[in-house]
Amino acid sequence: MTTHRLRTTLSLVLVLVCFCLCVRRAPAQITPLQPGKRARVIVFVHGLHGDRTSWRAANGTYWPDLMKADPRFAYSDVVVAQYPSPPSGGKSSSLQLSEILWANLRQDHVWEHREIVFVAHSLGGILVEEMLLRHPTDAARVKFIVSYGTPHEGSTVARIASFYDKDPLLNDLSDAGSNIFLSNLESTWRGSPQVNGIHRFCAYETEDTQPEDGWMRYLRPHTRVVSYFSATYGCDVTTPPQAVHADHIHMIKPANRTDAAYDFFRRVYRDNPITEHQTVTREAVVAGLTAACNQENRNPDLHVPVALDSTLHEKVRSAAAFLVDTVDIRDIDPNPPVVTRIGSDGAAHVSYGFKGPGKTVLVCVNTGRATLKVEFTIDQEVPIREPGN
View 1: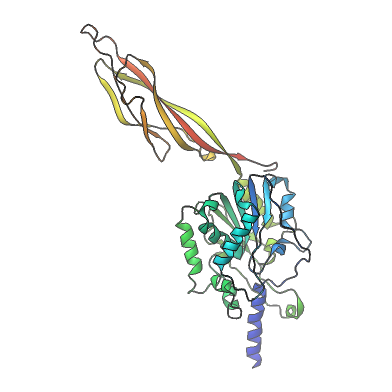
View 2: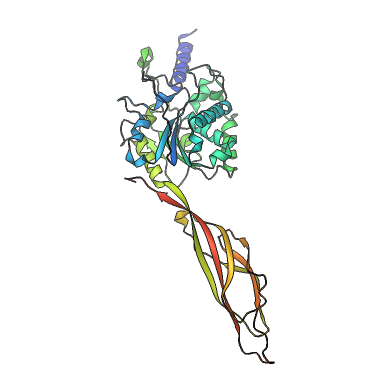
């Protein structure tokens, strides 16, 4: 083999090593965190070739533990998920791993919480989305996903690595034009009302990745594992993507609570607080309804609006209509008035009718009067904020 071909081959292998996250790992074994009875759970999902130790910084700080001790997350449980992802020679597809992830979360009682949020790194973000598409009932409780370096449009590194490792996940994450997996995943997500309301927030790496151990450090290869555009594609536009000044491996290893990765999630969490579901009643009245002697006042579709508070995500659950403060009316039809439907704006559409008084000794004396009252039953989500938020 020529010297030029040898150097080329070594460079590609080193890129593969970078992608496989061949860095120092903390030797300590981490016991899975046990969920309690809190309303929300925060789930950490590692990336390709990672595990539960992926969230530990060089100074020993472990992101999930840092969060558990933070009073700003006092009302949430923390669960660190894991799925099998060997350093090389993996055989499982993303679909298979998403099902394994779902089953592991069920074992950890994640799906028993009222609200669920995800912190996902790299491949973890792809698996979370695929999992939620396949389990829409559980997805209904997911409030948001914060992805760190998730290759929504693929990765050049994954494409090169797939030449040397036949792990099917590398093909799924490739940025090759023939890769339809990621484009299908995104289009399916956007076309599925069960999940497309879940907020997706994104962070991206700003530094290239290089190996740290062994003789390879002398060659100093550099590569950006996931580009800015791939990491931020499809994410919420109302919250700008967060730059994390670290490489792909270290972007999820905050050393303290002021690090960009940690602070970004804290701000997203603060802006999307836990909510308590409550039901309230509210009235709307239409006064001054009249009907002259032997005359009729009828409307098969009276539009009765109600004020709704968008900050509490208020929605009308049901409504009932009544005629009150009636004077000299008769032949109420229907009896009582009927709410035929609730409009998309929450307004009640009411059908009512009544007649005024009849003649007394061949003379009309009075005018019939009534007030239509509509009682709305309204669901609302009241934010519950931890101290410091």
